Image (cartoon, rainbow, N blue to C red; front, side, top):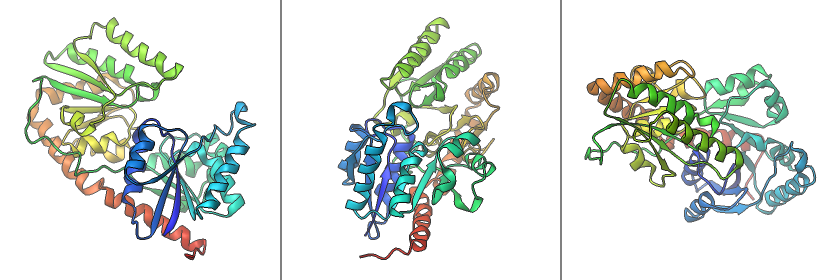
Length: 370
């Protein structure tokens, strides 16, 4: 078997990137590939990997470009290359592009092919800063996130666009249609942080409740224990209080059972894209999002949900009201979303596309199993 090392963004928490990595390493063809996952810290994601019998190791790779990391990054890079040599790793794949400098060390010192997975929109400065042009290959989750790479000079043929996937056997529509509340429930999913824009979601809720009475909003997720995230979490809760929405907006906290959390919703709103779009569609829920990241490529506008102008509180609110008042339209969008998820977001299709990339890279590296 061919050992492949994966560098994870986190070991102590599970976000969209960790979910996608878990799908990949647990569905690789084990007749050919042996996944090894390196996490920067221990916790629920690292434990989930171990429970799935995925070899997992803990090694903190400090931010390469921060001044405080200058003394520790070289030691960390040396430990990483030692790990690659110890396990005879033939390819390194990072789920976090900010770890590219570490990949470059491995590629330069050991001549091992490296893949960077791009999950965010990048600036030309970031493309240069994180040496994307020197990666062996790049996987982007959307054409939109591929475009800045090409504009910054990365060869288009070096980049494959592969959409996020979802376990359609786990995320399914709720056939029982039983819930604790009869209210129409709108949800947003993700860590409580500025990038996810929960404050904008609260403003949307404020607009909607001015027109509809029987509606509730769920903020699903929790803030990381950092000063920035704690501050933002406080600001979101303060905004709810300021608008007197305590009876309408509910903080569910971190949810271990996301399939059930999705089933409890009538509609998902996402202001930051991500794998939750596929999860909602697989659960038979329409999705409203803005044209950021992979959103426009995952939502079939007008069929499985709506793509509305960026940061348009008014437009999103109007679409929510439309689906609240037209239950038949909402139900049909959910059914169409499920069908689209089955055809587009399956794990098997996702993993096979990535394995095809592995095969080409390993062939070009003249790999022969010893």
